[in-house]
Length: 351
Ligand code: NAD
Ligand code: UFG
Image 1 (cartoon, protein in one colour):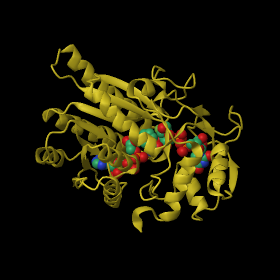
Image 2: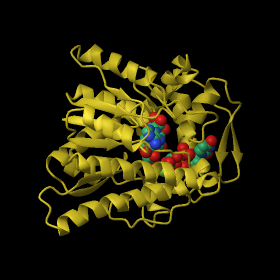
Image 3: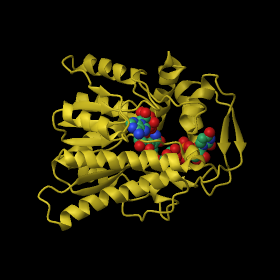
Image 4: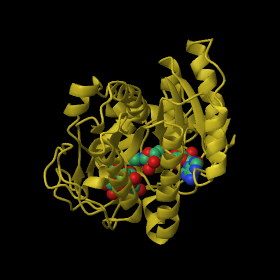
């Protein structure tokens, strides 16, 4: 298939572009490089060619999704796209609380323009990067896809929830109108992506001090930060610290390749959790990181972080049943690969 990947230079996008190329797909990337570097794509191509020497260049367009003319040109200059995998967006939870307008404008504005240009060019299949955050504080865990969506605790989460609704409505309107070719919409709800490609050549390159657990841990391990702050040890969880479903980014990337199968089968509207189904506490992750890498990780217990929930992990059964996808990597491999990336690239893509 010929796939448009928005946000393809970013963390999950770059790993997915690699898996798409290895699976034999053609890929065009659009990214405004607001949180990424083109170097990631250079390395993706290198990695792809090590396995498949005939892989072609990745056409890259430094275009903002809100730039309608720029996006039109991408479509006009490319052969017709069979599907768009849409990663592009802002994703920092705390920043979204401070700058809600910027988050709604970028994530919702950018997606509306993208969807409009897509339909004008008769590309009506989209795979969207959603998040477990749309479940809010889940009443029941493991979380299945039919669990009702909840109250998001921040504007970032609301952009995901609203975009899910917008794309679902496009599909529903087409069906009601008896459209010959209704929208195919695959909503992928990621749990907590961590780790990096096992080669250590592509990985997560956050700007400034990381908000998320694993990049914070690796920056403590590499000596850039003094210690890990563990946010809360009084949750109703086995050791009192927050429990999450961490998933290796390579497994997540492969989930997108499998989701293309649903698009090919004209799935209509489909929602899948992408997680492992296992919950690990913050202290479990610290221990796994120490064990996998033979390091000691200093940490200090701090008060709870506002907006955090106690526990969240997936039921990944639907994705296994319908997409034939399941996560393969365990928590120690995730910790090994996250550290391998960080120690080989202490300044991310900057060196
Ligand atoms: P990332 O920041 O590394 O990737 C997003 C990419 O989109 C970046 O390369 C950025 O430059 C680009 N971008 C942002 N706004 C753009 C715009 N208006 N036009 C063009 N490009 C734009 O983030 P990621 O971790 O790879 O996340 C990818 C997607 O998955 C995002 O939509 C994110 O919200 C979602 N997601 C991420 C997580 C996570 O923990 N990483 C969890 C759930 C969902
Ligand atoms: N944590 C710490 N110290 C830190 C960072 C995090 O103790 O320095 C704890 C948190 O309190 C939480 C766990 O580690 O218990 C995971 O926190 P993250 O910030 O890594 O991840 P979240 O589960 O809060 O959120 C992430 C993404 C969201 C996404 C969500 C579900 O940041 O965008 O996963 O996919 F919506």
